[in-house]
Image (cartoon, rainbow over all chains, first blue to last red; front, side, top):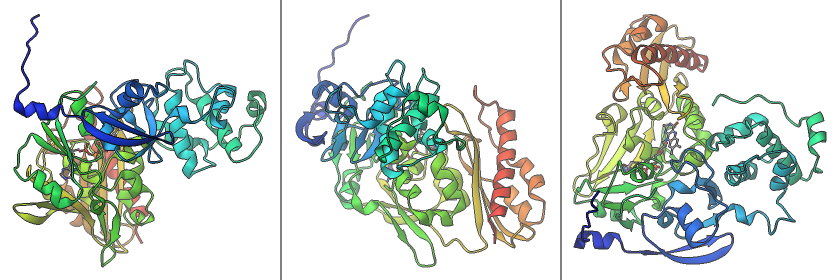
Length: 195
Length: 286
Ligand SMILES: Cc1cc2nc3c(=O)[nH]c(=O)nc-3n(C[C@H](O)[C@H](O)[C@H](O)COP(=O)(O)OP(=O)(O)OC[C@H]3O[C@@H](n4cnc5c(N)ncnc54)[C@H](O)[C@@H]3O)c2cc1C
């Protein structure tokens, strides 16, 4: 197949222009120049080396690219980096200073088998934290409703819901429980709402 | 996936945005939350040459009270902001629709104005917009402001009566009277969440549905475009029991058919959703 090279016309020259943006990423100010068409997730991963945030479906469905934009969970594959100009972005890298000191929610995912392959986990964590910021003591049904936009193809969600319940409890100041303790006495048995 | 290249400008005010789209060039598109436009651009199903980002226009965000108990919702108000405002519970069909649109992340970005302007024939909001007789305020630099009834707004699949130089500014909900009750019920396609059939019913009249003086029905997901079921409305007001009247809710429509729901099934589900929405609206009367 022959490649056709088209010289950029005067019109398209302007479209390639980079735009200066300012972000606060995980508490640090970052000044960047980006092409308007670049997605926030690509700028985070490629320009800022924050590869904890994953690209899964790349069609706004799976939620593994979820980050917080000004405190709200968003799918960073469906946000242009230029739209985030002036905003605060929080990624999964911000949750723990190092692997020895995990965020209580991350620790709960480890203890309560909230992950198998781990690919959906960054998004699950960020979406769960968005929920817990507004509702520190959700029912299982509320958790399921909140993670509707985060797909996991390993766990069947049961252990993710349990991990979020346990993480939420620790974040509320309750003592952490082992998987065996939690299994003996689930914290919530409320049914899931429709969809 | 990356969208094709485009020129980007950000408008700080409505006037600035209207100036930037004033030429009426269809290759220039307004960008709000981007939850419909960006996925289309990534798939290169849309290739605008210029985007005017209106996402930062503060005057288009938020909900205010109208005299007479109505609400004016700025076009850029997100689903999440609506969901968190207790005033929306005055409108049953609106309270029903908000939690079923997309997911948390989509509701945090997606706007009511963007969804209406996008005019997906299966958008959830279309049915409550029609049943609650929402009024849509639009403005262009050349022709000024106009108010469009929801029933006159949609002009086919992914098409509205808005001109390329026009923006949606506000969505108005008129006073919900004491005897007005509404509900929205949809059968979602399990993977996408979009309705296979979604029906909103709004009733005025005696509690219990015995003497219905007003019945407005909006249908989404079923036909080539979202529609008011005028014939069903008229026959209900004339005294036909709702369950009988609703049997023809998809009559005369070119009912959509796909791998999730063929024509007959979708039409049958429209009837079921209509009955459920009616029952839910009746339960809210009084
Ligand atoms: C994963 C996912 C799931 C979804 N699920 C559902 C669902 O279950 N039900 C449902 O109904 N919807 C669903 N949606 C769609 C979502 O609700 C809409 O994408 C969103 O509300 C559109 O608003 P926006 O601000 O993001 O619009 P944008 O994507 O920014 O814009 C959409 C279109 O409207 C135009 N536009 C935007 N604002 C204005 C304005 N003020 N004046 C004139 N034109 C304007 C734009 O030019 C563009 O053509 C889903 C979306 C995603 C990504």
